Amino acid sequence: MKLIPLNNTNPLNLNEMSFDQLFTQISPEEIADNVFTLVGKDFFVITAGKKDYYNSMIGSGGGMGMLFMKPTTWCTLRSDRFTLEMIQKKQTYTISYFPNEFKAKILFLGSKSGRGNDKMKEVELTSVQTLSGNMAFKEARLIIECKLTEITTPNPTDFYSQEAKDYINEAYKEASDYRSYVFGEITHIWIKNQK
Image 1 (tube, rainbow, N blue to C red):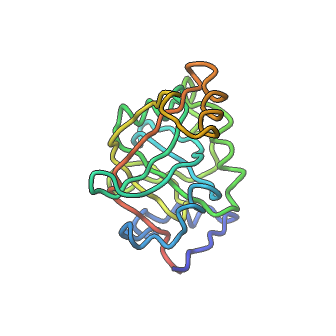
Image 2 (cartoon, rainbow, N blue to C red):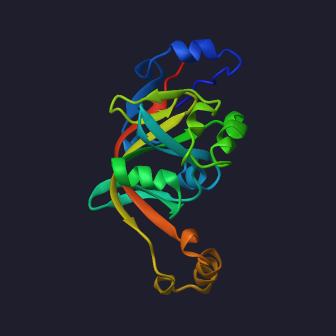
C-alpha cells in the first residue's frame, strides 16, 4: 500500500483535514509493515489521554501477536513514566508510527516529561482525535488504537537467558528504573490514505 508523503512545509492543508480524510481503517492482517521493523527501527509514539489532557512518549521495543485470542500489542515502559500513569487511568492508548522525516519532532517527546507541564503544547506535531476519541497525530502513517489488557512488572528472577538477566540487572538499579510490560488489545488500526 502506498502511503501519502506529507509536505510538512505546508501545515495548513494538514490542519484543515479531518481524521477520516487522512486515515482509513484496516484489519491487523492488512498491516504491510514487518513487525520487527515497526518495533525495532521505526520511530513511534505512545499516547494516552483524551483531547482535554493527554501525554505522549517515544516508544522503544515491543511487539504484536495474539493474546487471549485477540490481536495485541505489547511495549515496555519505565515504571516512572507519566504516559504509563495515563494509560492506567484511561485504559486506552494509541501507538503512532511516523515517516523518518519527523524524527526530530518525535525526539522532543522523549526530552521531557508531561508531568507538571504541558509539553503537548510545545510539540511540533499536529494532534488529532481518532473516531474513538483517543489522541494521535496527523503526521503519522500508521496508528494503532489499543484497549489496556495488562500491565506487569517482571521480577529479575523471571528471566532465564544470561543476556536477559544481565540487561535486567543493569536496568533495575533503582525502583524507578523498573520496566512495566504493557499489553493492549488492538481495537482499531488506521493507515494514511493514498493520494
